[in-house]
Amino acid sequence: MNLKVIVVSVITFLLLSLSIGTSILNYSKSLSETEKQLKNSSLPLSIDNIYTEIQKNIIEPNLISSMMSSNTFLKDWLVNEENNVPKIKKYLWTIKNKYSMFNTFLVSHESKNYYTSEGFLEKVDSSNPNNAWYYNFKELEESSEINLDFNEHMDTSMIMFINYKIFDDKSKYLGATGIAIKTSYVNDMLKSFRENYKFNVYFINKLGRVVISETGVNSLKNIHDNTALKQFKKDIFDTTTKTIEYNKDGNTYLLNSKYIEEMDLYLMVEAHIEDFTQEVKKTFYINLFVSLLVTLIVILIILYMIKIYNNKLEYLVLQDPLTKLPNRRSFNNSFQNALLLYKRNKTSKALLFFDVDDFKKINDEFGHLVGDKVLVQMGQILKKEVRQSDHTSRWGGEEFSILLHDVSLEDAKKFAHNLKEKIEHDELLNKFINKNLTASFGLTMFEEEDDMDSLVNRVDEALYDAKNSGKNRVCTR
Image 1 (cartoon, rainbow, N blue to C red):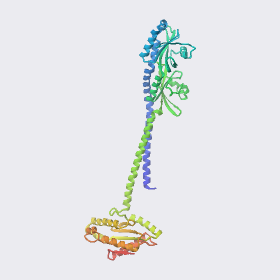
Image 2 (image 1 turned 90 degrees about the vertical axis):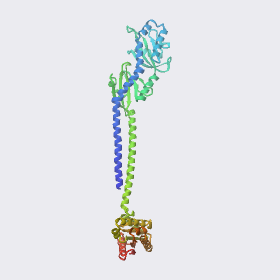
Image 3 (image 1 turned 120 degrees about the vertical axis):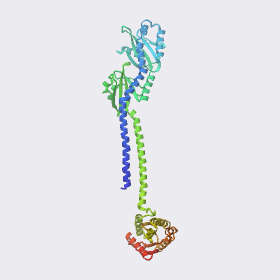
Image 4 (image 1 turned 180 degrees about the vertical axis):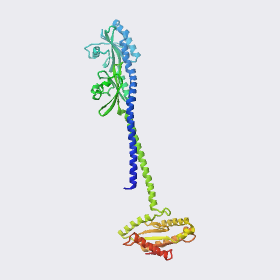
């Protein structure tokens, strides 16, 4: 496998492992801390805040009802002045408006008269289904109850009644009184708890029956119907605040129960952990996306840098840094391809070597800097004179090679003599050494049985012939 591919694969794997691993680790830690904070801090504090709201919105009406039932004026009126309807009407109207209640009511056991802040409403009758609440309440052992019911004389919607029994000083039952609250008001309060705190809030009595809950949200009628909750019955009905964790339908819930003595009910605050971890999950996905994006950018940068350095390395490996011509390694690659093509299609090819005459003397007399300038200019001449389809290179030192494609021997000789003349009469070269600079050329053609060694040996011999026969000439083999 290509080393570049291996390096990039390893770096990619490490970066992805780091980014994904870090994101998952942070997510797990945040998830754990969120659940811990919810269980140990947020839920207990929230139940206190909710309790404060309930005190204002439900417990206060409950206390008002309790106060009305023990009011001496009310008891005296029932015993001695029930015929004075305006008096009780004024009392009920005053309580209603003072505490901003939906309505106030009073039922006299003696006369069976039902009064509200508007005055006399109706007579309650045990045979009337609409009056069943009163007779059921009268038979209860408890002195109070919260009852959800309709009363067509008050409103068309369901109303929450907080009922209290009235007794005289000798514990004789005198009737019932209390406060009426629109359930929409209570429902809005419970809805605000769900929307603002993400808690499902409801109330149960000592039998486990759900007495108050948000409409359309809590379908639970009795906690005994919930198998997961049933096992925690002892903790729920403990008068101290308890936090319970349970699972239902693959979801985890936290439940905090608090006994409210004023209502004789249990406040249940339920939290679905998923609702509190959504933000953590959202943050996880954002962090993961950013991490992967950064990783991708880093990988692209690495690939780009590797490509740049790889190109530079390839250039340094295949190019001569002084003359900017291909070097001997590059020539060898091109030569092998040319030899294969020659043997396949027998297209005529030639190999030309030339050497700068007396180059050592130039270095000795004018210095190596001038010698380098000569070689650089030689490279410029070759780039200008050699066809792009041919291949030229610096073979080594002051020696250069040219691989000529699709050329006859006569054309190759003509090219070599022309190049020799260009070098000899180049103004810049002559300026460097203050005289004409010459070169000797060796030329040979590709033959059927040739390989690289045989061709190079033959062209070298031709070059030696040129050198030994007086230089500045073209010899062939």
